[in-house]
Every structure is written in structure tokens, then in C-alpha cells.
Image 1 (cartoon, rainbow, N blue to C red):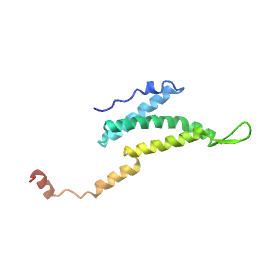
Image 2 (image 1 turned 180 degrees about the horizontal axis):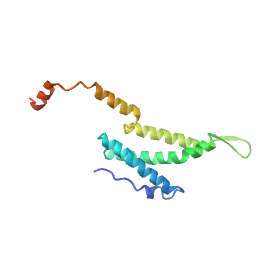
Image 3 (image 1 turned 180 degrees about the vertical axis):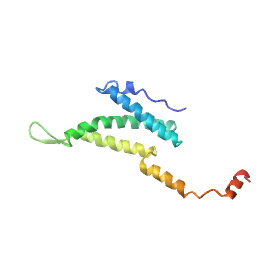
Length: 136
């Protein structure tokens, strides 16, 4: 049994930009699912990871422009400085997204490693074909 696309409209409903975030989530879900299916990597476990990845990626895309506008250090009304929690949240979301992409084998490094491994496999010979048809 494979997981269906989560109801992102309900998930992001309480957010000020919930409709836009839900639409982005639906698009990301479809893109990740399509990629994993094409490489025969889609299963229920990866579907749950994709769901978490989509939620984190949507939050990242929402917060990133705000964090960039504010910068990592803010000034208080009294003249002091403090580290932006929003900036920190964006960095943590970025790290989470990268870890989940790596776990799903969708990073350029993991895709490249799979391609290189396929290239290293020796070509099938006539003897290999014969032995495959006539196992002992």
C-alpha cells in the first residue's frame, strides 16, 4: 500500500498564506513522487519522508525571504543586538531538507553515485545470458 498525497490544504489552513503554501506543497509532492517513481524508488517509507520533506521545504521557502530581509542580526529598540530566530529557523530547515533529500537518494551526489555504479557494471556476455537461462 502506498501513501496518498496528504491534504496540504488542511495542513496549512491556519497559516496566513496557507493557500499558496498548500499549492506549493502539492507541486513539490508531485515532483518528488514522479522522480522517485521513475527511478523505481517510491514506496510507503519514502512517501512518509517525502511528506516531511515537502512540509519543511514549504516552510523554508516561506521563511527564507523574510529572514534575508531581516538579516541574521537584529537591533533592539534599546540599541543592543540579537540573533534572529527566523534566520536560525531557516538554517535548521535547510539542514533538515538536505538530510531528507540525501535519505531519499535525490541529491546530485547520490544520483551521480548510482549512475557511476551502473557504468562500472561489466557488460553482460553471452555466457552470462546462457547461465541465466540454465541455472544449476
